[in-house]
Length: 127
Image 1: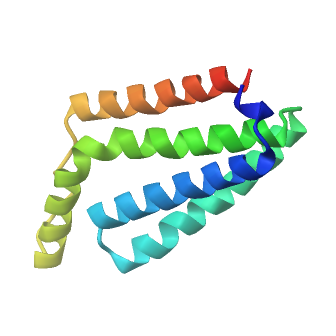
Image 2: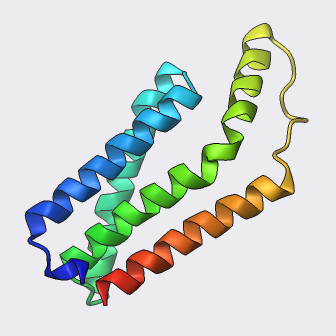
Image 3: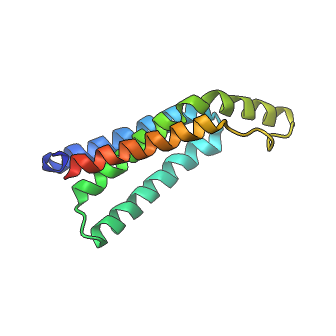
């Protein structure tokens, strides 16, 4: 279904998903290094995803849809943890130890369900 959309719109979808997740996570984790590194790593990872998909016989349209869905699932899945990110950052700035802070298991389960669920939806939309 989505693979029948013109490729320019899929590039726009991928760019919008990258920008949305970068802005959202950048506001939750307000470190300058993170704001620079996260989009860079995601774009390089997306390029690697396109190369791997093309080598496996998946078209560019399918790879772009999966890339956008991965960003959407990542952003949705990390939504409950934004307060924890702020707490860790505040403690880190005060010089306190932060290695004992762990996300609750329900947050990890929500993250996994969101990411996998949106990726399955993206996969279904590419067939």
